[in-house]
Image (cartoon, rainbow, N blue to C red):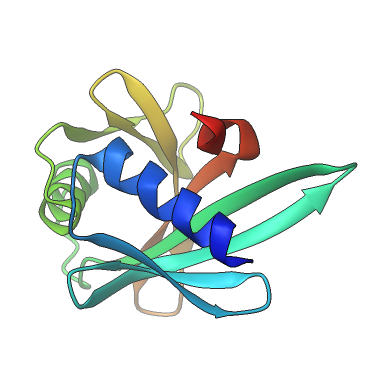
Length: 136
């Protein structure tokens, strides 16, 4: 990613989440880190397909191994706290049990996939960003 893309992603994500503390920091090649303040929150990767540039924000969320944790309220609270935005909400997906959807108000943000390991469960937020999103 070049400097222009980093700036555009930085501006877009600050505006999307309404959080001036968000920063996009290049890591080299097609990868950048997403930080909120000094805390790294996730990873941005760039991809190009048929001349179309796109980006994906990937955030890994660990809620703990307590089976009584209700994922939807816990994920909503986690994302609200991390992005410092109370309008974020997580909802179940009709006809899907392996994932949830994340919204900011009424705007779709991305999908939270459930990843099962031996004794732990994590959630992976995948937030797609198209180059047309950055043009505004």
